[in-house]
Image (tube, rainbow, N blue to C red):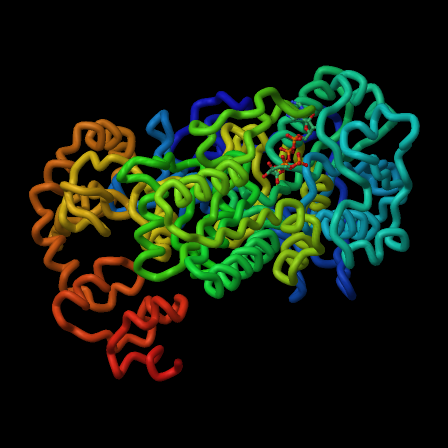
Length: 595
Ligand SMILES: Nc1ncnc2c1ncn2[C@@H]1O[C@H](COP(=O)(O)OP(=O)(O)OP(=O)(O)O)[C@@H](O)[C@H]1O
Ligand SMILES: O=P(O)(O)OC[C@H]1O[C@](O)(CO)[C@@H](O)[C@@H]1O
């Protein structure tokens, strides 16, 4: 199946299934043999018959007909948050992927297999864990020859770094450290040179990398097909950026978020102890803001988050700088987290591309730091600005325990997929289940944060920030200034009123799948904007009465102006410095007691 193939909404095992996998038996004569995979004490040869049924109590094999649903939510309406309708009006509702795991029947004689493993792109916590478990699993099947390519695809061409033989003994302890035991690189020799080398009887090729590496893996697969090489290509998605479609997450992402959160917390500590302290943290994320968004929520101490997917104004009355001033006036502190790829439209990029063709970005962190300093100097507002750029620290470490486990499962499943004969596939977790997915489908486009997603709404609910845009429809529900003077509420006024109206209890809410496509038109022509304007008064009411709205400015303003007092243990004052705390006059306020 090619990347451009039409996708259907309803699952079918026939040709139009976007998750149909290439299988080696479609191109080569290779009858299945009984699996040689044994886990501890398992006696696989007694447990299955040719149809894959298992006769004994021990069950170690996944049946080839097992499937994982790509979407497990029943979406009640095409405008439901999270439904992910793509630019062709398509969704993955109803689609299923093949469940990963060992099969009872395999398509390679292990003693004839020569496997090769390569790690490409940037570093990512967990690379060594994946290499290690891939080697272990190959050996469990009975493979004797396992080659490690050095320094990514360059390892095919660079005579100084020939492939190294891998074994359980060699890789036993590599998971204790970060980095890649094999080395990584960007850029690669001509694909034909790589395929020439693969003709050295390599029958299983494991590519551990991100979108670019998977594009490379798929291109190599195509070339091998053309040369009729009997080889399977299996990818293992790696990227701290978490920018791979469909998957719950990629390995290393959790660890990177953990490390990023530490940087944010350091910025918070610095800023909270300084006079009008500003903490700025720049985090990796070339085109997608996942690390920044998740670390922001994890830290809980961020006032402003800026990601590549959400444009922002800097210096106007709706811009970031004026909002920072307001935060400083109110709380004496402001923590800003900015993703590497954010605001690239505002600064001069370095231009050009790296060896892999990725754009070289301008340094938004330094640029933003300079702008903040200049702005506050220009208005003679004393600030103490600390800038932290943890860059490579978030990806150079060994992974945390959840990533150790995740990587182990991915490495093992990659080997199961190869022995099952699947090729041009990758292995990933979808809805907490492991599955094999066609590479072309997962790299159709990079995954980015959807500013209309639940997760982004959660993030800006956490920071309490407004949209840094000229409001398209102003409402008094805005998180700070009113229509005459400034910011609109985070998430936008359009998001305030549900576009799909009140629930109709008696009618079935079940979503007809063909509705999804037509709904795109509805959404474009929707009168949602108008409605949200009209109903702003009700929104405003709920806003005023929301005493527990801990993160937004309006709760403080209404508290103070209504003469109400803050009894909330999570009073926003509690999170900020002593100067700001003194603004809380409530004798019951836990902060007043504490200090
Ligand atoms: N479209 C493509 N076709 C063939 N090879 C590619 C393609 N894109 C990238 N590659 C190769 O894949 C390798 C890794 O690509 P890249 O440097 O973009 O990292 P990545 O796999 O996307 O990982 P990361 O998330 O760290 O950026 C490089 O050797 C690069 O030359
Ligand atoms: O400096 P390098 O190695 O090119 O890597 C930087 C890039 O790697 C990533 O971490 C992963 O692609 C990006 O977020 C970042 O732009």
